[in-house]
Every structure is written in structure tokens, then in C-alpha cells.
Amino acid sequence: MLPDVVDINEYQTGARREGLYAGLMTFFMKITNSIAIFLIGLILEFSGYVANEIQNATTMTTIQWTMAVAPGIFVIIAIIATTLYPYSKEDHRNIRMELERTGT
Image (cartoon, rainbow, N blue to C red):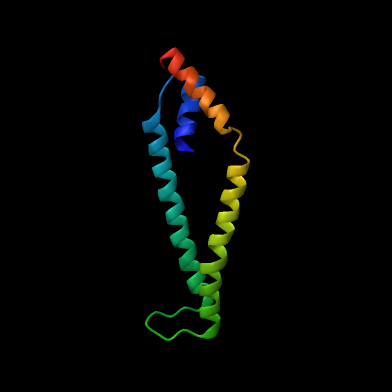
């Protein structure tokens, strides 16, 4: 989707900004990774996790649910986001043809 967004932005503004979009994507990935690590720490603390010990059943269940349910939720969010993406392959092909025609 990132190349599509770069092409759409170029079509709308006349400026090619791959570097800006790549930088923003990297920045937001770092922020979301930091948030995920923080949340995992909170979940482990909430579940009663004790390092270097055999974990109790509640802790193990919490960890298992976190590792199974959380990724599923994010996959569902990603599927919804991609289905709501307003540009089709045909739209992108037309934008690419127009960009090639105008030489931008």
C-alpha cells in the first residue's frame, strides 16, 4: 500500500515523496513497537509473572490468551483497514498511466 500512497500523493501534488513516507512509516513502526513492549510488560505484571520461577496457572493462561487473541484482533483490524482502502487496482493503474503520461 505504501507505493500506492506515494503514487497517489504524487498525482495529487506533483511531488514524489518516497523518503518522507518511508521515514514516517519507520517512525510509527518504532512507536507501535514501543507501545507493544510496554503493554506486554503490563500484561505480564498483571498476570502475576515472576521471572526465573515456575508460573502459576493464571499467569500461563493470561500469556496464552495474550499470544493467541491479540494477534487475531490485529489481523481483523488489518483486514478491515484493507477492505476500506478507497483505491482499487484499476484506480492505481489509471494514476500510474497518468503519471507516466505527464512525466512526473
